[in-house]
Image (cartoon, rainbow, N blue to C red; front, side, top):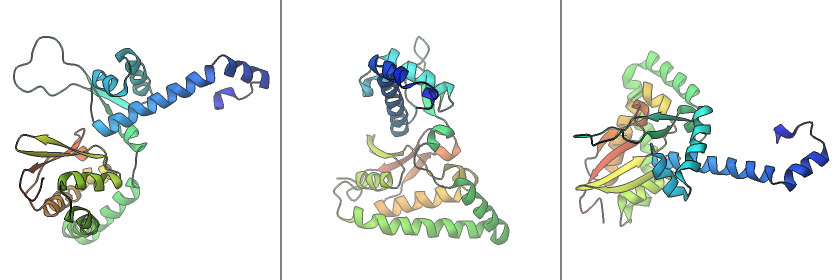
Length: 236
């Protein structure tokens, strides 16, 4: 409560009596819920957020305005396929790098520097070997969780979420979309796409199907999206 520095005890009690401290605490908690939901859902409209949080759109927009002001959130225009209907499409709110940094994160600067040194001393082949080694450890840990799972994409999403990727699955056409709403190494992967390529290949091996990476946070998309075709081995 740094804003109360220098305020006497009676004044503090007065603020508590009138609920000011409680209101500020509740607002801070709701704002964190908005940020956490954007982390889980990816770019979303105020209407979607208000429905998920059980708040009015006006209340959600108030918190979004505060998050916009402190640089945690930014806005973007939605991608509209086909003919656009009447009216302007609702704005999407998405976390900035600063907003993502509040979630699970790796030591990006150190990792980037290490890979730059590796690339300079051993070439791109050395970076690729590192990426393969990294995902081999991931595969080994995840394989046991997926082996007896009835729904392998869902089990994979749970394993990824435990590692900080905030992953979800949803039915999509003739398959499943695996969405990773947070990337702990997004800055590193932006410079070294070998990390994304190796991870995509590992996901395919874990699911025993050919998967297709449709979007990545490292390349400016709101969510890392991987399409998993429906097969007897991949889904229930």
